[in-house]
Amino acid sequence: MKSVINKHFYQQGYNLIELLVVLVIASFLMGYALPSYQSMIEKQSQRSELARLQAVLNHARIMASLNDQPLIICPSEKGNKCDSSANEQGNLLLLTAATNQPVFFSSGAGFKIIFPSQDLKVYPLPSQNSGGTLLPCTGFTNNKPKGLVVSPTGRVRVSDEIDKSYSSRCTN
Image (cartoon, rainbow, N blue to C red; front, side):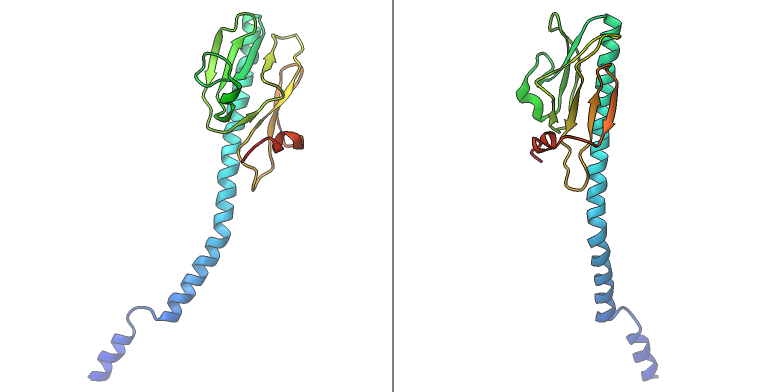
């Protein structure tokens, strides 16, 4: 009877070697999963910021055509005037070019946006714009930088062929 009790006692739980094997396997999997997770988070923040910028630029193009007047897209802190120092938050303001009246304000997600100059002008169609590239600084440790290219006709497209001078101006 004593041997049956001892045999039952030894079968309960896990021994130290089994526990160590499970910990090694778990740490090995986490070593591969964590960089993939960080890359996925970085890619998602890049996509959402590009989508927001694309929506603001398309909105500006439509508003300029509807009102038949050029608009200016610039960084702004509170949404009442252009402020180049507010570029760190990614807030964008649409102003009428003639009267500098605010038309639309889009609050950013905290990512710096690199402009071709201090601001970007959007003219009503069929006028030609100067065009330019906007680059949201969403972090480029795991992913290539992607920016928005505004064509002279005002069309917006996402491009991963970004000039090195743009990405070098991002601090993250």
